[in-house]
Image (cartoon, rainbow, N blue to C red; front, side):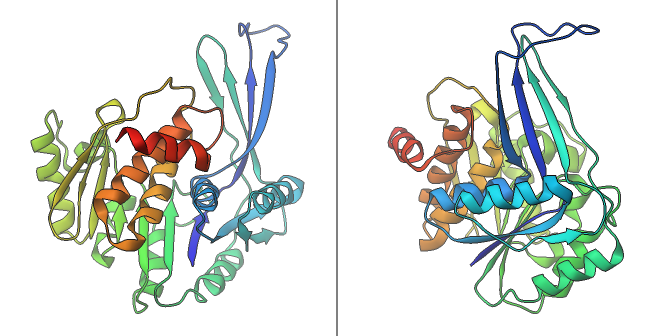
Length: 299
């Protein structure tokens, strides 16, 4: 079973405007609502690929209940910790000539709530996959990733971490199965600017030396590079299509890689991850199974 953790889920309210006029009343040309959060995105795309998962994390209020119900409707099992106070956040994404985002803060998470999450995580068993993705809300301790992995370090599970800088560097000692920084984030970790694939590969291998099992570097329009657990370097270009949306593309890549790596074929896992990321980028919503397997034919 795959378990994903989203610490601060949201309803993403996407509005399209012909023109955004500040200080005036604006009328939308169209609007959509989606369940947001990196872990939730991974679970939804896994469901499209036929992989069952359980979405964990914190929800609150009527917005939290709406998130849980919507995620269930998309074929994902949920086991969220429901907070006693507050409401899960609403993120507003305004799309006109430019894209503007207004993200909510989300509810306060108490120590008692964190203990409830730990109890749920304790049920993870050998052979399962745990996905930790995204930033940490201000009400949670900054080392929450480390605390979770320390508690589970005695179990033989595969851990996937999609986070930035110190959040990622501090958990490498627990030997995560997969990490997925992009090329800019990789450079930030070491205080360098990476300009060539050779430089990217060299610094990705440094992350392996620190403990990561597989290192997947996404490079936007330049494709992706994977250094697998055997030290083999794989590269993959991008799929062809018109980019409509960048939100969730990286999460879709993670989901595709998890699904593709079940057989141990990392070259295929990279291709499936790339196709899943592309299917999201070329759509107004998260990747669908049909589009993923159409795009993988290009790779």
